[in-house]
Image (cartoon, rainbow, N blue to C red; front, side, top):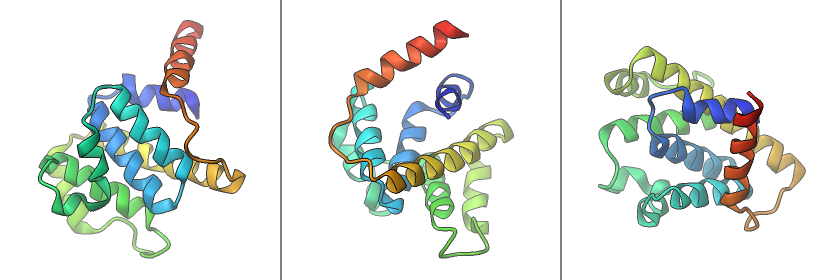
Length: 149
């Protein structure tokens, strides 16, 4: 899963910010404190504005997100709420996603949704506590993975 995560940030043209927005929103919905903490910190560590990421839970009311980011956030929400909607992603969400992303990017967005939902479940099951994540550790891990390839 770690290698997949690195690929999402190196082998796609989907912006880092968009991926982190999606991961943060899914983590909030899934109640994963560890991942919520991680993706906020990763975004800020990468230079994103903390104010923007503080507004992810209320993205519909916040003007700081582009239409493309809103489509990705809707996809992240729909993917995290499958138990609430057995039909999966709404037609409205797919329409917005297709308007802003090409097929390759959509594949990356869908894979990211699956990945973050899996990570959320792992960390919730293991009761991984929030608040102790250090983004420098992840940066070092990715550098090590890149050397191995």
